[in-house]
Image (cartoon, rainbow, N blue to C red; front, side, top):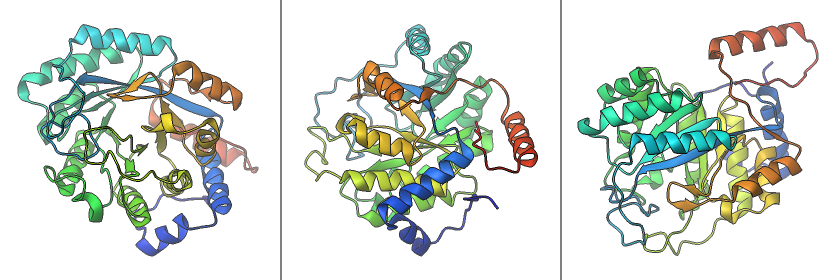
Length: 346
């Protein structure tokens, strides 16, 4: 029997009981699930680049790029394709296998799509996995991105449906679900997670995970961000989140979405090595690598590599074969081996 089968029918009571397990029991369960589905000593290295910065019309209270708030961020236009490719090439040289591009838009306009599509094509030619986050997508634009070769589209749910209106008023929770539906319909993979530490309750943290896990198809990528408090945003003075609560969120995500990459995303600057190592043990298997995540500070790249080395882990290599081939290979391994050896699912 599979240790943690993929489910889409989690109840509030079940997730609450899981989230509130004794801490060591929760981590043990999460680590066991992780080992059954991934190589626990590999971490995927991703790089995230802001391709258009600031003046976003949305009013997300956590975001320094919102045009509604006075932060020190300077507005920048959509950068040239050549500069994006240059940054992608540099990211690959430093060990990244995944390159994400983000634009501070409510949604991409028709005039932007040829440039966006060209970025995707040229970054893919470098052999990197590609992801974009551009705001809301229509079905037509999702298909345009798919035709350009985009692998993943990121559109976070941010928080639970119950807490959502305390954070954002210019875009509904259903708007976000609609974009995810369009991404799926186009045949791309979904990257969707959220932010914790925005003043929400524990019920909102596991409520977010329940929404993600109960989607018709679980996201292949689940970024978990810890709020980075930025002066000038409405959340600049919110109380810090207890670090054990963050680790609980990582562990619960791993158990509920056993085949997904759980990405340790924003907020790592406030995490010491011990906390990050506990997140890896609990099932996080991807980090964003580089000095910045869009506009917020990120740990030094050398420090990240030193930590990975200290833990005896390795950066994951890019796999160029299809998901179907991976699944067939894993099925063969499971069928041929009576023992519960560790195996990796890409």
